[in-house]
Image (cartoon, rainbow, N blue to C red; front, side, top):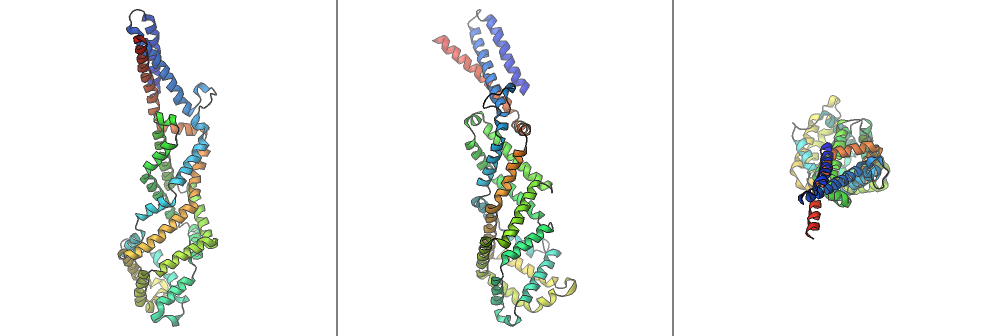
Length: 402
């Protein structure tokens, strides 16, 4: 396409020279001369405009040329700020999560033996349940077991416990599936908001880019780059973005244990969950059936209590699957938690985008953007040549008539 566009300008130059030779032979040659001259000028002007976007024309230090490589750091910061302001914000995250029934999905998984109930989950839950049961005063059990258990839960500050569990999971590399899920969710969020991205880029680009239609191409390039980045994160276990996310998770684990404000917020959410009547009814029914045998079964060697625990997990799954009020409470808790995470740690994710683009050299970003835009750049030159020629004919016609 470069050769076609350049060849068309050359053809205009040849036509111009030929028309000059025959100009006096017939008035029609004046129109041909005007067409060739204006087309040649239009083609050269658009060649200069297209070239100035990505490099300096003829290598000359002309001001306001090589726009993309000269402004790559600003472009990187703008991209990062755009992602921060339009995706990792509470309304967008909450809207995406509002359409997801996390509690219902978890209940369906737990209630169906063919979908869940792994040995690791059962063993871990068995150990935790045994510790909780042994921490309670046996004399307060019986008819007051529900109130006693909830009082113990109310006394237990869950934020440091969650922080310790998260830190242990990170140390044992058990958090990798969570990172992959977050990356996939980020990709789906961007995909659902592509029109918003295109509109924002269109509004923020200058008039030249909008006039030439390059704002749409630039939007396509930005979206393709982000999708490619997320795909690389999923495929490459050593990708730098994973490291940034791990840093964020590690900071979250530390904040859960040491940040007084975050701990207070989680305590308030825990209190709301405990106060839900649906939780009380569910726990009372389960506890009445399991309390007499659970401790003995859980502490038997070789996991002999797993059958009883599996029944409890299945019962929990059925309640999560079939109780809309319980689903609403848990989904709201999850939504508030993830919104808080996006607000607190989202800037660490988008910062990686900015830093990655800034690390690219000028030739790399120029080549990638120019290749992404592709043939359309040369069609600008072709259109400029032809449109310029027709404008020249119009001007010549007006000049002749006047």
